[in-house]
Image (cartoon, rainbow, N blue to C red; front, side, top):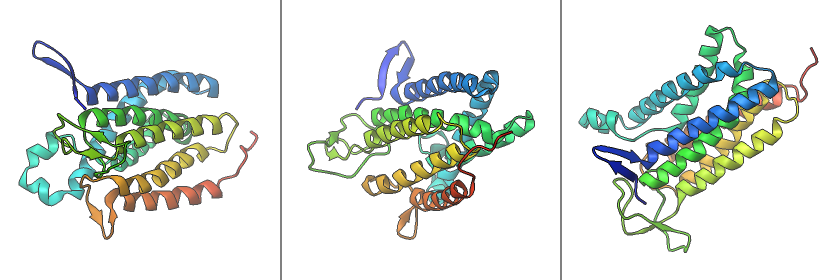
Length: 250
């Protein structure tokens, strides 16, 4: 794949950044529409999304540095300015931002978490298309006819057939978003939709990790993302089933 979409003078539009931007815009549009249907403040979605994106990216970068700390000490500038992130760091940072910013603005954080998680999954789906264009988050070598070959990537091995993990994750995120949007059509106890997102993402990510071939740190026999995902899956599943299955009447 080729990450440079087009260049005008000294300005280049990169596929990764473009897909991130499209994902954020899509999340805002859908979040605004869902807010109206849920009786929540649509205007609040915009600053909430901005802070969630900013602090989520910072958290994803921090966790990436922590999981690759020895390499970071050898090249701090490269790690800070490079494209390396750990998505679970972004998810954790995003959730904390939603809770913190909502509390500051005297909004219900759980209601806005439930509102935004389908939008987050959609944004992630577009973001993984950006990963495909850039060549990061690549898979293992394969002989499958479904494998993809990179020619100009700065991250993935070029000229060898690889498992298209970026496509798998992108499709998976769009499927998760669809499930959440369908599930949220009925009134649910607050927190159910948010927990379901964490459960589905953690479950899917655990298995996709076996197909990837870029180093992301490890805890024992598991990758960092698998280890964090197992904890998040267990906690979100516990909370999901502890919550009432029907929304309590006011």
